[in-house]
Length: 195
Image 1 (cartoon, rainbow, N blue to C red):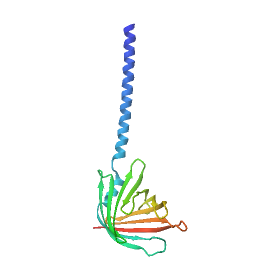
Image 2: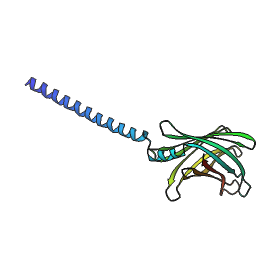
Image 3: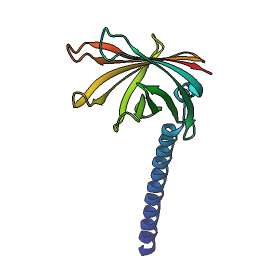
Image 4: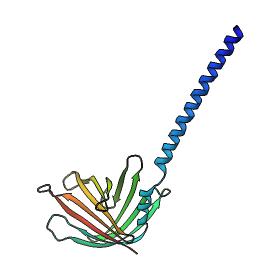
């Protein structure tokens, strides 16, 4: 009887161990599957990759509504980085007689289902961050975010529209609120043409 109980206890212990092990393996497999889905570039990343190459950039800047824009020409070198997960674009031009350099990093977050953009340049010490979604009707990615404005000493909201017109043409427009009445106005437009 003693051997029977010992055998039964050993059987129950091993059965429980196998069940826990199998459950752990199932959980681990599910976790690995989710991690792979999160880290694997998909169709949105392939669309970002269409911007890879060398571009010319014709930019217009409006300091306030109903003013004449400043205009400048520049160049952009775009490449996919980190295994095709992010699009990095390096800008070069001259603005108001000063050399201008900026780096844009675009991506699509598979987990949160949003596009995002990080921008830094040599005319500031901060970072501009925005998130957006693709609008199927307008064929544009619509971003919103905030950026620090040193002239008013605080962050201000902005909206940005990116449209890949075709494989060799892209347009970016950025809108800010007017400091007088808060109404949105177009502050920037950049037309990109692939070389």
